[in-house]
Length: 315
Ligand SMILES: [Zn+2]
Ligand SMILES: [Zn+2]
Image 1 (spheres, rainbow, N blue to C red):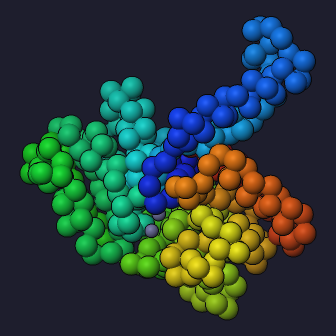
Image 2 (cartoon, rainbow, N blue to C red; image 1 turned 120 degrees about the vertical axis):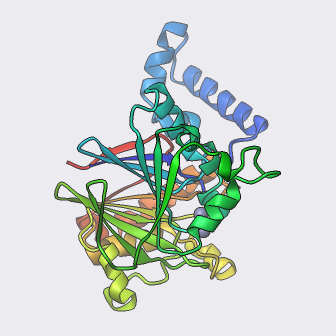
């Protein structure tokens, strides 16, 4: 199974401002010279010594994840990242004819890219939506509506279907076993445990992760147990949670607690705050690194902060 993150921002697509980009550019140039490099021929060497995220950041787009296994694909959520996924499908001239989109919930950052998912407009394509909440069909239809979008739903060329999922009920979708679980989020929001080829992926975005133990989670513990990979919301830090309680977003501390409690092998955090600059995310990551060194999850788990276009292969 392979997971690709097409959008890792929370709440709103957000890029560095022109001033921040200029500052980042100046910082890289200073670092290039400080390291004793002088020649343009050394630029590639200098850049190869740095992580991609420390050069150009974590990305702009909101939530969209692609899950691949044995040539089959699932898509989770249609934030603005689904537009970039759609662009790669266009390069293949939409050779694939059937698309499967799981929807966690309808907050705007998770659906705003759906009108830009090109298979909707292609005759012969089928787009299947899977969701626990019964209002999925109405909400998707309302996105394609004049005057908020120039093409009405009735003018779409694809065969579009809506399939209702039930919480805690495993269902086979395009070769993947998918089970929805309730997350800690207003309005409500469902995470998905996806199993394929003996590997498991837990999608836990958006969640405040108020419940992190088996006792607190009850039936929802099934989302986390012994996952090979968990992808989870860590928009905030613990010291902000007093003001942001009930907003539905978690922290890296809570992610690490889930990893420790459920023997999760690997975790990627995401759903970065739209106000967070590259420097802010780097600072949070450094605090996460320090916290993790003392955390019991260190024994079983590896962790990182997800970035846009990153691929993680589960072998
Ligand atoms: Zn969100
Ligand atoms: Zn949300």
